[in-house]
Image 1 (tube, rainbow, N blue to C red):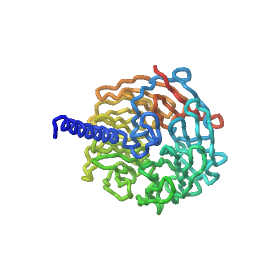
Image 2 (image 1 turned 180 degrees about the vertical axis):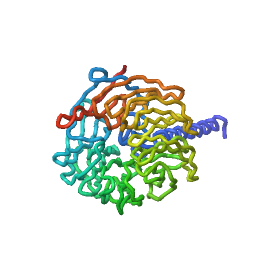
Image 3 (image 1 turned 135 degrees about the vertical axis):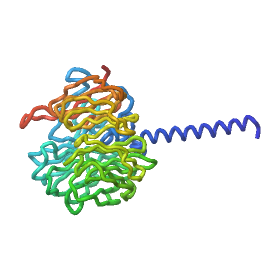
Image 4 (image 1 turned 90 degrees about the vertical axis):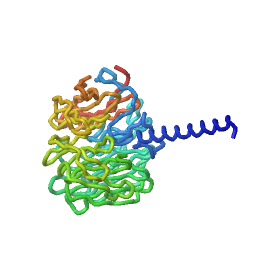
Length: 436
């Protein structure tokens, strides 16, 4: 072989290897949307906790200070009530909501540029549970989208229902996930559906005979698998992370930290940890997963996700309703009573703590090097993801009632909040953009 041809072959091989390496890195960094070519990690927030399922937004800069007059792109009223976070896909924003008085579940679509409500599709009438927790709603699960359809879950008529709509609000299919009628704690339903490959996965955990995880085909709605869970009321959304070299379906609660194969629902490993009821979604860093909760006791725990059952560390702090955030070797946790912690992920060492104002229900989002975290009173704290010290950047007051978590993508912040109480209560959807 001639030298020039040999060099050309070598360069081609090197280029292919480099391309494959970069593709692999991109896939690892954007694992949550790798199976969904119609979605963008930079521009979309397609499901609960964002593209990577861990509360980490794209690198596009967003404002750290915002209000009714500063960096406000638009603000529109939201009919009904719900704690579902905004789902953003392309030019579309989707929200789940509920009219408690009329007992109607609905899905809303807004225009991303103007905030105009484009349609409202009512998907259920009646059958609301007699009781619910005062901090929960009848539209708490966040909608998931695969770039073509939206998937939503609702609790009514003593069952969980999963449905798929197209982007024009037309029903594609609707399925009964399974019975759901908790007796010990009638606190409603909360887990968000998650998408994996060609399935949508739903959790329904309660103190009955049919506590379970299950998966349905995204196109047809046919059930793919169903896995029993302990008969115990819990509220955490499951999550899929690529941890310890494999995709794992992770969930806490029922006195366990557990992992399943998202392909078929088979158990991978499970260890004792956290408490009976948790609400937050698990996070991970390297080959370690983290969970926190809950009720009746408090515990935050770090576990090796390799099946060894090794508990790396644990403490007696809790994030019950809210999730945590893992980033660059550190774990950030804002506890129920408003104490913000930074722990070293490898051994749980406390790097610092700071008293903010609770109570807390929303989960955090990391955008750039800033963490955005709201309390229930409408105060959005913005602070640096800095393990060396607490650095508060801004306190932004938006509304008076803030339970849903923000969606941050494409240089914009989307936030669902409420003002007023009783008959005067009104929910709003905000879009903030521009630079400080």
